[in-house]
Length: 258
Image 1 (cartoon, one colour):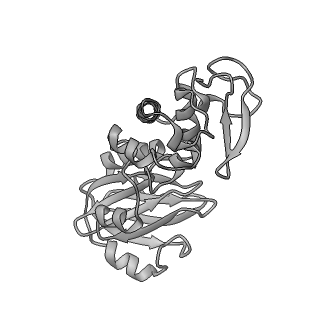
Image 2: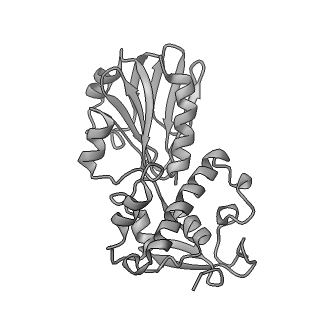
């Protein structure tokens, strides 16, 4: 599932190519994925608009228009494809024809969503999203987590607490911090939560710099080979698998700090 690093990588690539271009034609091809389900209204709010910038909050990507913004959430299997001239993909759900090229939102599993919104701040406020994981400061991170009586893994996944962390990167952050995914957030000392904040930023920055290519991640990163029963990249002992907050969690019992 695309998480913050994948969305940020896509945003940077689109920014280079799309800013300054005008939307000539737009097609919402999947009304299940179009929030509101009105294809005519979607097109009328997009066509003729100029893309003036890009933005991201958590896992949500925004194409900023001269009036409004196109919000895209990639869901479980979504991806964005840029073509210089024409182009088609196997599971295209939305197509934007621009002055010079075409953007296609492809999503085989159809869990993604797209819509035109007023602006980024209004969308974030209406959805009750927490601060972006790359923007939140250490003390705000601590305040938003320190009283929560849930497993730290579940708290990190809560987009209303901090936006952008998903299942894969939550496991990576906790392995690098050597913190048990089942540890109750309210019982974790201040210095360990601040350490988790620091690890979170490092892991996300590392993923973005590597272009989210797991093979380019550091040798001690779980995401290079994330599977229960495989050797831990830190100590070489067997990784464990369990359900935490309803999500498959990979961790190493030997690397946990006592």
